[in-house]
Image (cartoon, rainbow, N blue to C red; front, side, top):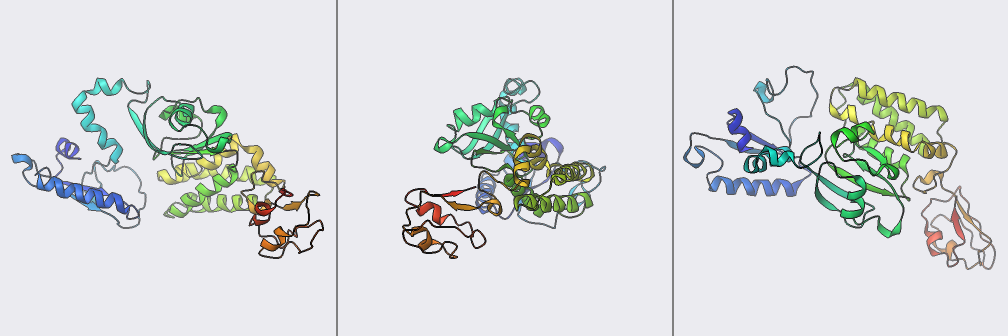
Length: 359
C-alpha cells in the first residue's frame, strides 16, 4: 500500500476489513502500530517528504453499486480519485519490484501470470491456504497438494471462486487454473475458494447453498439481482423438497442469464454461476430430484426410510426414534411411518444388521 500510495501521490490509506474477521483486524492493527514505531507510516516517512496515514476501517454504510463512469480512479471515496486494490494484488508489488517483471512473468501460464492463493477445503485429506502457479490443473491441486479425497470416496467436483464460483465436474479436472480457462467453463478465480466435493454431495443442494448466501448478500438495488436471486432460490427450494417440475429447469436457466445481464455489480453478475454450472454439468441430478429422488440423501424431504426383511426385531430402532415413527414390536419385522419420520438417521445408525435403508 505504501508503494501504491507513493506511485499515485496519495496521502491517505484505508484498510477495509469486514468486522466478522476479528483476527485479521487485530493483526493489521498490531502491524500498523509497529510500522508507526518504525516511521514506516505517518509523516515524513524515513525522513523523506512522503507522508501516508493508514487507517483500518471495519464497517461502513450499506454498499450500493453505481453506474460508471466516473470510475473510482477519477472520482471515488469522498469524490476523490481513489486507487482500489485487494490485498492479494498489493502483496505482489514488492516481490515484482525486488525481482523484476520478467521473473514474475516466468511464473504461470501464457495469459495468466504469477501465482494464486486458494483456500483449499471440503472432502480433501489436506486442506488449508495454498499458493500455486497459474496454469496448474485442478487434478494436481486435489491429488498432489490436497492428498486426494478423504475416506476413499469418489471425487465428484470442485466449486471454485468463492460463493459465486462455478462447479466443475471431476472429469474436467485436467483443466488449467487460469482466468480464461475457468471463465470458459462457467467458473471463475474469484476470491480463491476451492471446495472439493465427493460422491456424497448433492449438486442441487450445493447450488442452493451458495445461492442462498449471495441472495442474502444482495444489496437489493438492482431489480434483476434482488428478484432474480430470490426467484431462483424459491425454485431450488421447490426442487429439493420434491415439488419441482421439468419446466422449472428452463425457468431457472432464464432467470440466471437475466440476472447476469441486468445486474450492476459483480455480485449479481456472478451469483448465478453455481446454478448455471450445475445445470450444465449435473442436469441429471436435477431431473432425479424432480422425479422425487436425491441419491445422496442430502435433500431430506426426498428421503424415505425402509426396513428390509433382514430386520431381527431387536427394537433398537424403535427405542431411538424421537417421533415414534417406528412402533415397538419385539421379534417382528419393523416398519417406518415416513409421515412421522424426521429423517434423523438414528434408526439407520443403530441397526445391528443394517436392515434400515433409504431410497
